[in-house]
Every structure is written in structure tokens, then in C-alpha cells.
Image (cartoon, rainbow over all chains, first blue to last red; front, top):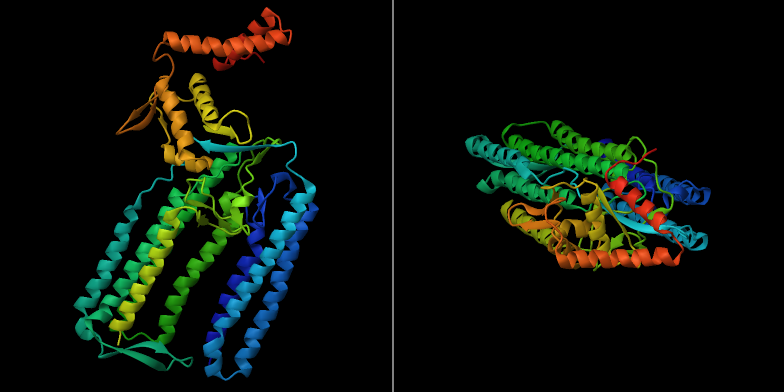
Length: 369
Length: 130
């Protein structure tokens, strides 16, 4: 076991913990812990204290789990550690979700006691003009070009690939897993690229087609926020997919050119790191629904509040509303979009995704020997 | 350009949608040839049933405010495009009668009501005196 591996595990752990600890501060101001609230109470002391108490819990338990991860790394035999280290991430995620649930119920109770919405009118607002975020998936051509290049390199330089290709190294960078040179080997990066293209294409589709949720108290401002929010994430998806496909182009090249394992690691983690970091930065600066963008404020109508559809949000995170034709809607606790689970398309997409993953996995196992 | 629906109002949602769109046409914010969003998109954005939006669009078409076009989608026909038919005139008069009756019961004078109508008319023509 080496330190680079431990650093890597720590980074993954921290990214998850940081993300969870800041989510309640990134949501729209008309909701908190999956509960609809009037925007003006978002900064009320009791609401703020639920957010802070959640954040403190995440930070404290994050430190505890992180310490545990590092201690176990040093005291457990490395074989055992390598088998079970992923459990700590499952504990981490479960604990944070429990903290969320606690926040959710505290928020719900507070709302019941405070009766904030009394005397206010619930409105829904829709724009008759589009945000201009049109569905234009022509960027997929660039993806196809990368795939073709990847395939082409594999075919042209096939003779230069060694009979055995290293696909895994141990922690001291000694090779410990090989696959034989076959035609499938050079197809494998392309298959992965194809799979990723499908994933990124669907994500892009979801973003463009997602409901444009407008705050009725200040429609103009809210519309502008949603417009920028969608635009930035749609562009990010295209960019992230491009980097991910490049990783597999690099993989193909690494079959031919004898790169050092350190170099391979730096490239792969470097590119993945850029994607993760970029999504974190965008989340913080843009906020859910564009809520954190620095825009000129529209004078808001204080007597109007957003529709309270809490009853359709199970635990504040799973949206199930048969009366809503929208399939893709903004998440309440988190950044991005989620599905309306009352729509068949949501399940078709989910099932299709699992099926595709299964097929890719089977092909890879059968093909790489 | 937005349409705003009061979820808990006594006025049915399809009527509210219709009224909002007619209001936008009257003010000139929606002009002849402007496109309305597809039924599915508007329903999804509002989070309401498809049929509700469909109903509103159908009434708007029957009354000559919009037209459906296979290629272009739903198009606004604008103001002054078609003259009101006799039955439409009767219908509008009926609505006004109810409103005037209500004012009358609440002791508004003929002049009061005329003033209100003038004011509303001015608003549409952007002639509000500050």
C-alpha cells in the first residue's frame, strides 16, 4: 500500500463531505431540506439554525470517518483494507443522508408551527418565451470524431501493441493484471466512449427538457437565473463528456506507447479531477436554479409564494406527482435535476441505463481475457 | 412574458390561462405571428394537466385569438384580425352585464363605471397619466 492511494481515498472522501455540507446553502431560497418555504423566512434564525446544525453534524462525522479511514489504512493488513475500504464511503453517505432526513423533519415541524404561508397566495408562473436553451445536440459530432480517432489509432498501430497489456498496478506501481492483445482490446476504449456518449447525451437532453421553474414573486429575475443555470450545466455536460472520452482515447494510446504508470495515473486522475472540481465550483457560484448568481434583483411581490407541492416530494427528495406532465424537474436538495417517478419515461430511462451498464459489463468480462 | 396562475382560485385554471393570453394580446405584448409554447411544454412548466392547457388553447382558437399550424405550431393571430361575430358580441355583453350589475348593486354611478372602463382602456393603450 502506498501513500498516493491513501491521498486519493482521502480526496474522494473530502469531495463527498464538502458537497454534502454545503448543499443546504446552495438550494433555491424558496425551499430548505426539501420543504417549501416563503423566501423571506430563508434567513430567519430558526431556519438558519437547522442548516447550521446539519452542516456541523456533517463536518464532525466527516472528521470521525476520515480519521477512521486513515487509521484503518495503517492498522489493517492491506489485503483486508483493499477489500473493505469502500464500506466507509457507504457509511459516510448513509450517515449524511440520515442527517438530511433529520433536517427535513425539523424543517417540516417548524413549518407546521409557524404557518408562514397564511394570507399569501400560491401562484405558478410559466414563460411564454423560451429560455433560448434549444436542444441542439450537434456536439455529438465531436464525440464521434474522438471515437473514430480512437478506433483508427487502435487499428493503425495494432502491430505495436505488446502481446500482454498491463491494465492494473499494485500500490507500488508494479503491474499485477494483464490482458492479452486481441481485436477486442482496441475496441474496448471505443465501447466505453460509446457508453459515455449515451450517458452524456441523455444528461444533456434532461437539462434542456427540464421544467423551467419560475418564482412567481419575481418572474423576470427567476427566469434569467434558470436560463443561465441551464445553459451553464448543458455546456458543462458537453465539456465533461469530451474530457471523459479523451481519457479513453488516452487509454488506447497507452496500449501502444509505453507510458509510466505514474504518468497514466496523473493523466486519468487529473482529467477526472478537473471535472469534479469544475462541477463543485459551478455548484457553488451558480446555486440550484441559478439562485446564487449575482444578478440585479427584481422587486418581489411579498404576498405571492411558490406552489406548495411538498406532498408529492417523498422525504423531500423523491418526486412522485401523477398530475404533473413534467418528467425532469429541479432537485430540491442538491444541484441538478431529478425525475418525476410518476412518469413511465423516468423508469424506462433508469431501466435502460441499468441494462446498458449490464451489457457493457458482460461484454468487457467476456472480451478482455 | 409570463402567465401567472392562481392555484387556489375559484376561477378554473383553463379560464385563467385564456384570460392571461388574451390580456397579453390586448396589451400588444403578444403580437401577430408570435409563437405560443407547445401544450406539453406549457403544461410541464406550470405543472398542470395537459388537458387543461389544451382546453385553454382550443377556446382561444375558437374565439379567433390563435391558430394551429402543423409546421409552425401555435401562432398568435393578434388584435383586430377578426370581427366579433354576433354570438361573441352577445357573450361579451353578457359578461359585462354581470360586472355592471355588480357595480350597480354596490352603488357605483354611471360615471364611476365609465371612468373605470376608460382607465382600463387607457392601460391597454399605455396612456396612463402619472
